Each structure stands twice: as C-alpha cells, then as structure tokens.
Image (cartoon, rainbow, N blue to C red; front, side):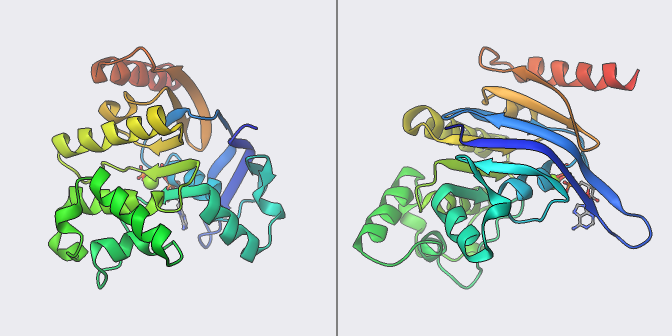
Amino acid sequence: MVPLVVEDLWKTFPRGDSPVTALRGVNLRVEHGEFIAIMGASGSGKSTLLHAVAGLTNVDSGRVLIDGQDLSELSDARLTRFRREKLGIVFQSFNLIPSLTAEDNIRLPGTSGAELDKHVDQLLERLGMQARRRHKPGALSGGEQQRIAIARALVCDPAILLADEPTGSLDSVTGQEICELLRQLCDEQQRTIVVVTHEPHVAMWADRVVVLRDGENLAEFDTRHINDPQEVASRYQSLLRVEAS
Ligand SMILES: Nc1ncnc2c1ncn2[C@@H]1O[C@H](COP(=O)(O)OP(=O)(O)OP(=O)(O)O)[C@@H](O)[C@H]1O
Ligand SMILES: [Mg+2]
C-alpha cells in the first residue's frame, strides 16, 4: 500500500471579496520509507497542502489517501483517531503548551500507561533531551523546543511524519542536527517523511524534492545523490527561472 497519495487537490480560501486559491490540482505520491521535501516560494501552498494531507483542512475537490484510506470518507471522530494512529505532525510554529513540561508535551497525544512512559523516555534520550525533560517550553531554546515538537509527533509511533519548516527558526548547526535525525528516522525505522522547506540545505537530506508554484506542481527532482546544498539551490532556481521565462 502506498502510504500517501494526493490526487488533484483544490482548495480556495474565501477571504471576503478576494478569494485565494491556494491549491490548484496538486498531485503527490510518496512511497513507504521515502523522505520528500516540498519546496516553493512563500504563498505557493506548501502549508495548505500539508494541512490537507493531515486532514486538518477541508478541500474543495480531489482526494487524500493515507494507506489507501480516503480521508474525506471518515467521520470527524474516526479522522481524529486515524490521524493519531498514522500521522505525526510538526507544525510551522511548534505549538507546544507553555504550561506543560517538555515530557508532558511529548506525552500529550498518547494515552497514559507504562508503555507510554517507556516510549517518552526513549524519545527524550534519542533526542538528547533527558536533562531538560522537566523544563517548560519557555525555558528551552528554539532547537530544544523543536526536538520536543518532533518527539510529540513520534510518540504514537506514526508511519508517516509531516513537518512544516522544521528548521525554520533554528541556527544552522541545530537545523542540521534536526535534518540528520529525520534522515535517521527514515533510514533506520523506514518512516515516510514529508518536510516542507524553502531551504536547500534541508531539502538536500530528502530523497526527492517536489516543487510547488502558485498552488500547482511545477516539477520534481531526485536528491538521493546530491550532497551539496548549492546544487539543490541551483536546480530549484533554474526550475523557477524556466517557468518564469
Ligand atoms: N486560513 C487562510 N485564510 C485565507 N487565506 C489563506 C489561509 N491560509 C493560507 N492562505 C493563503 O493561501 C496561500 C497559500 O498559503 P500557504 O500558507 O499554504 O503558503 P506557504 O507555501 O506555506 O507559504 P510560507 O512559505 O510563507 O509558509 C497564500 O496566498 C495564503 O495567503
Ligand atoms: Mg507555510
């Protein structure tokens, strides 16, 4: 079963007198254990696409299939359960709860019990956050908050991880560590990963880059053999240039 298929997805935001069509027939297919990066200029529809894939926004037409299940066929209650079972989501803003400690933020989507406690411990260790588990988000650096957001996304052991600009607010060293972590999750645990980014040095870690422009698929290219962010940047720029001319 292909973990993620998007078919001809359309989405318009009403926005008063000037509606904005954020998605204009987007298609996407991500294989098991594949790591893709979605690139595109600001406003090209990347976050809207990710929200639609997560079933967090209603679309006008088209389909999102997760493990063959059409999200639009699920009731709200079933969709919530399905999302929790299948998807881990890291939002563009971390969305941590300020009043909860790091470990309680991680625990949040799970149900209680010894199993969960063990898993939270494992995640804290894996992300190098054991020493800071009892800190609240306000006392954590941006990189640490990002790790906690990733741990929270992983706590229910999702097959698919969706992340919107996971390194957007991080310095380059911390950003690189987060990328290495995502790559490991893919290589060692065969998770399927979809990362939205406009940074070539993040996209470089993916297997494939999908480029959106004005809510449409513009092009895609293989990045499995590219280890140089400059090369990703020049490919990306040249695609945008070809389109503009
Ligand atoms: N809730 C909303 N209401 C109205 N318009 C919206 C809403 N969300 C997004 N849009 C519009 O849809 C378009 C696509 O937005 P989206 O957030 O998907 O872009 P993006 O590619 O993620 O951009 P960025 O790189 O800046 O995060 C933009 O024109 C945006 O203004
Ligand atoms: Mg966005």
